[in-house]
Image (cartoon, rainbow, N blue to C red; front, side):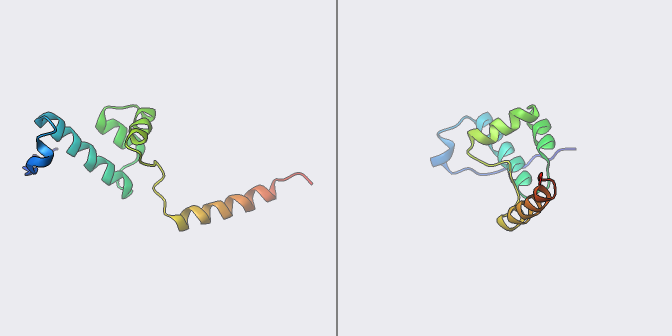
Length: 92
């Protein structure tokens, strides 16, 4: 199911894009926002945008966005866990 909405775009922005380009950009931005909030996976986003998994990662790169959605504390915690894991398997 999909929903159609009406959005008013200021002339200063709208004059630089066609209507189709604006629609696509808004669609992409909503998908990116949902991805960043953790509501959509990379695969979900890729499918919605008609891209491959790798294509979505490239898309994010072109927008200068990260595919990592974890916060700093989450990343640091994961790294500490990884360090402990690696020490367990180091050769003596």
